[in-house]
Image 1 (cartoon, rainbow, N blue to C red):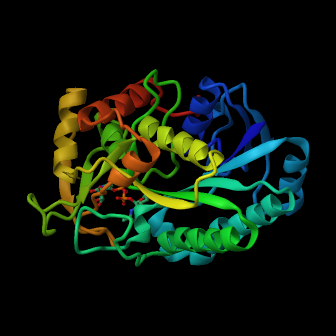
Image 2 (tube, rainbow, N blue to C red; image 1 turned 135 degrees about the horizontal axis):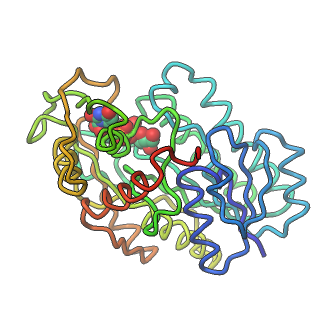
Image 3 (cartoon, rainbow, N blue to C red; image 1 turned 30 degrees about the vertical axis):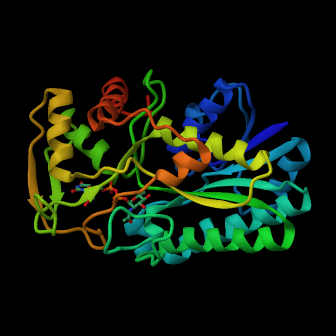
Length: 329
Ligand code: UD1
């Protein structure tokens, strides 16, 4: 039996494929390679290049493989772009998922684990955020992920397709041996941008606002290591396989770090100066987002290993320093 990974050439998907294969799962990958990198896909995975919005293509993969469940990472995920072009997000993320669910229903595949996001919560007043915190997305990206969650809930009720939605906080780092890592074009995320400055590829970090209501005035986020994050996906996959009900879990570390703290940590890890300057706020950034992830620990038995943010940055640094041009070499 095969695990089908959608978006398996992307940053998070490629780490999932790698870990699944290392744990002896049979893996098939669908990716349209619009943002993913073929080189990032483990050579033992069977790769089908195509788009999840192409129903005949998705059907052909389900017909060739004996699929026991789906892990779904295939989505557009840039918040700013989603505000400028919301229909791209509703098309790729929501319509794409709808097609996947249609084909799953047709082929009687009954479990799906999928990447949701802290952006479904919007800007909650209280932190840490639990799964009971009301959802109130503030951008089309978060809205599209919440729509995907809702669609799955109704498919569970009607067709018995069980889902686990994993609401990620800030995913960071790379595989410990630095063989795969994060490579986005354009890059918008804090840690890779800081490391690009450390490598001299950018002049300085722009700190987006230092007048937030936080200890040092910069935004606070909860960083979770990519390998810990993937562990939770595999646990969720096994949880569904064991016949458990659909569920939603936050994935974070329960502790928040400000932009300035992350910058300091990166200076220590890299030994580089990393120039930075305060810039205006970025539209739509909530001041603080910290997860309560006790539920994933209790129900799934998730035990994140990377509790020190410097260790997370170190794995990202090993990757970026090794592959300064990412997969383009
Ligand atoms: C956002 C989404 C998250 C999504 C992720 C994927 C929200 C609230 N969060 O995370 O759900 O999964 O994108 O793309 O919508 N920063 C700087 N300078 C920079 C870059 C970032 O100061 O050059 C700051 C940001 O203001 C933010 C923090 O660093 O406070 C982290 O930013 P980033 O890495 O882009 O992630 P989020 O926006 O938190």
